[in-house]
Length: 293
Image 1 (spheres, rainbow, N blue to C red):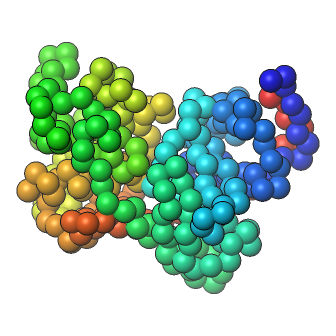
Image 2 (image 1 turned 180 degrees about the horizontal axis):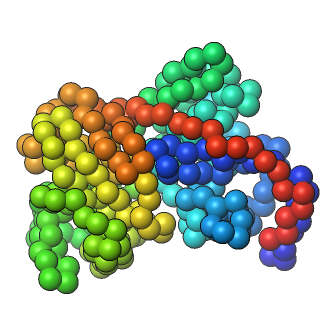
C-alpha cells in the first residue's frame, strides 16, 4: 500500500507506572488496517517522534462497550496489555467516548472488565478483571522439556546459568523467573533478550524476573516482548503473582503488592481470576499538523 497523509491528527499520551502509550481515536480517523503497524513505528520512535512503548487505537465494538487495539513500538500487535488497558479506560471516559464507570472492553484476548475510580471527573485508577490465567503449554504457547501440560519451575539453560521459569499467559505469554537478588539493567537486557526469542517460545515471550520480599510483596523487572526493558508491565505483574502463588511462595486470594520500576500495582489472584489495580497518568494531548507514513 502506498503512503498516506493525515492532517491534524489528534492524540493523547498517557502512562501507567512509566509504561507509556499514545492513544488515537480510530473511530474518528479510521486508519487503514495495513497502515496501523507503520503508524505505530512512526509515532513511537523515541527522539524522532512522540515516543512511546506502544500505540493504542480506540475502535467501536459489536460485542462490548468499546474495542482496544494495541501495537508495540516495532509495529507488532499485542493481544493484551495491563497498563495499556488502564490508559485506554481513562482516555475513553475523560474524552466522553464511553461515559461509564464500569466498562466492558473488547481485546484480542477477549472482553475485559474495567472499574474506574473517578475523582472530580478524572480517572485516578482502574481495576481490571484480567480473567483466569492460561497455564496449558499449548495455549501459551511454550514447548516443555518433558511431556507435561504445564511448565512450572522449568529449567532453562541460558549462557552461564540454569534459570527456572514458570510459563503463564494473561492473553500474552510470560516466562516468570524467581531470583534471590534483582537484576541490574545489563543482566536484564542480556538474559531477557535471549529468553524472549528462545526456541521454547514459538511466539516469543515477555520475561519477568521477580524477587520475593514477603508472602504479599515482590519486586519485578521486565523485558517485554518486542519492546525491551520497560518501567512496568501490567500483565507481567499478574503473571508474576500467578506463578508465585502456584509455587507456594505467595498467598492466594490476598492483594499482592508488585513493585515495578515505575511504581506499584496491586494484584489479587483468587485461584479463578486475576484482579489488577493501579494508577494512570495523563502526560499531554497534542496534534500533528500533517503526517505522512
